[in-house]
Image (cartoon, rainbow, N blue to C red; front, side, top):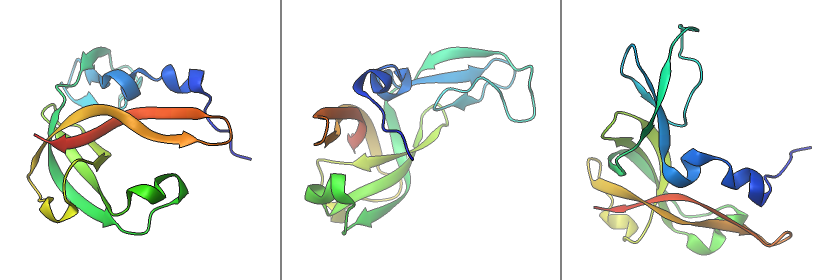
Amino acid sequence: MAQTLTGRMWREQPQRYRMMASKDTDTGKVYFPPRLVAPGNLDAKFEEVQLSGTAKVVTYTIIRVAPTPYGDLAPYALAVVETEEGCRLTCQLTDLDVDDVKIGMAVRFEFRKLYDDNDASIIYYGYKAVQA
């Protein structure tokens, strides 16, 4: 049985709210969400870094039939974006017409409501991307 995140557990994920990442001090590679271990190097040392908040769209898809928590948002764009630091992550593009989304488009991250859990009245927040 899957366990749902409580509000407190969700708030304790710094990357969700502050776009925190980890940087391998040997290679300079930045990981989001933060890692404690680098692939192939168990002894890697990391430092915490704040992502700049800007990125470019690498690829995207348009969701026309959305799952239950997002049903009222359809159609919407879901994209893989690459940050200035080199991290790739998936996020929803918002505040634009889905027909205007283009590969290479500059975006910036904003803290937004993702969805709410009607059963527990918990509102889940995180990052979404808007056109820069």
